[in-house]
Length: 329
Image (cartoon, rainbow, N blue to C red; front, side):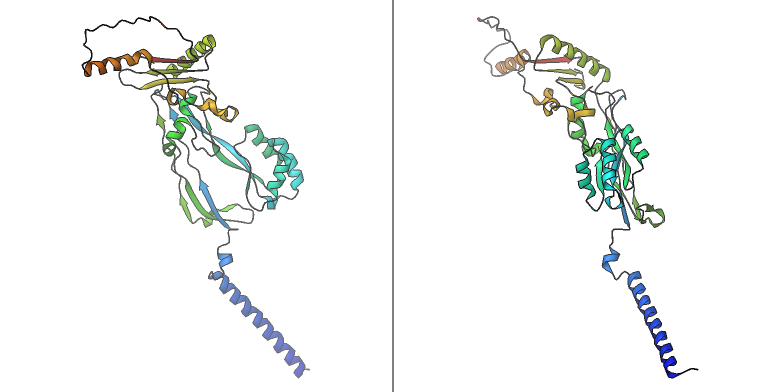
């Protein structure tokens, strides 16, 4: 039997459902049109990827590679995805030779954190095998000098971000480094890029390659002979410069002490100094030409004048050795 009470309950239920549905529609309308700034600007789903350029290669005059860039993975973590942080820190400490205390401190953060940059192949293999939740690998580039110590003071080296810090790597850094690209997209709940939502893609521009006047063979001979001289006379420092007298091109430059740019951090900063350029050295006999020209120009001496040195010879012991070689080839 349909009573007034039943009719009231039905009407109330109908109006309630209609009201809820209207509120839902208004809410959807509000969100869809972007009138809710916190959600509109939420970085949880936005994806901005920096595309690193490839650093330029450095060659000798004959096209031999002196500095190249190799692929190397880096390890990073998303702490909010890590369930057992203590266990994860223990495993990473073992494989990456890192402090568990520092790892746990990094895991206390909310967002992206670097764990170790540009790891070795063995470390990469161990991380992949461990399958740690919230720990990921990111491909990067690592600067490598295939000739080791050869021409170290000329080439210099780069930091962990491939920025030149010494030598040619520093002087020509703006040409070698290239220009970064960007990719604007969106990501899902697993932090994977959704390619279909890519909005903008600006490709990276690789750095310029650099061709030096250095000859790797002459450089090797110069460093070999310099090493023999150092072992024989035991100077505190020594330098060899090889030039082409016709063009003035620098064919080789070597210094002692030297270092390996592939592991520059294990050497004292004093080893980085390019003594052939930064250190002062008295010119000696080669400067007599300048003195003679000045005397002739000021007319205080004639070209047929003779000078007698009364004191004769003077011997001294030097702590620095410098050799300048001129070659016609």
